[in-house]
Picture 1: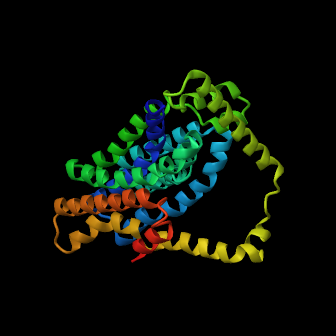
Picture 2: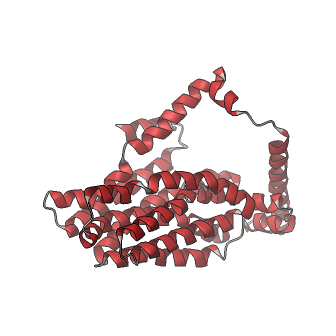
Picture 3: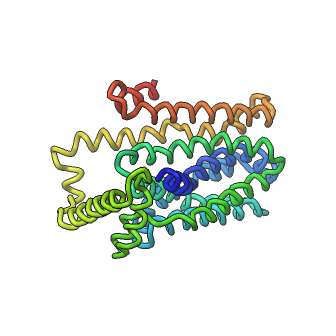
Length: 324
């Protein structure tokens, strides 16, 4: 089953890798792009900052797109949007075109915050679901140093942006080969296809009748969960925000969710080459610093993934350690 599952979940997580690679590439190419277009400080800030609110909007529509058209098509759409956007940026002859490309990229990048995790969770067996779902942040962190490495090896800022589009093209080819998630297939009434996907994720060490029984059991669990989702009443916005039993937990969750991006980790990566240039560090050395920072970020993410289910550490321990 792992020979089937591994290529599928790796392909499904590729948009997350592209998101990290895009972040590294933009950080590496920001300074030469500024020099080429003779951008003002305000224009540089717009180029960096505009992607975030648009990515937020992209993440909000991602769930609806994935529910209506499927997780697979959602992954493909996000990847195509990013690829088209980076081609636009690479071919830009003016700041307006450059900014437009970055804004378009924001839509696809926002979708990659949602759909890859959704796909990996729904196609994975329950006993490895948590680990496989965590592949997405790991892939994002892996893309960061690769992006700075691309900026180091590619001598042109245009080539750097085009390299993201090339990676998107490779991802699209692989995404076209993967199946859609069993849950979405069931929601569309495509039971035979859902059963086939679930059957392929069952260990091949089991006898064929046992594999069919396990696949049927997982299918029944999906059907039961879908029926419960239809019958259970969804809480209203007022109940969610003003209910006494939800208020404390909701406030804590919202503050935590807001503080994570407000810390400015992404801004550090985006401005690392640009900032070090002010202090006389060469562009080559600044990219090397970006690679090292990205690798350390990846190491921390891999470590957290390995201990997050350990009762000795739990969720709170890594969170406090990261904050320190």
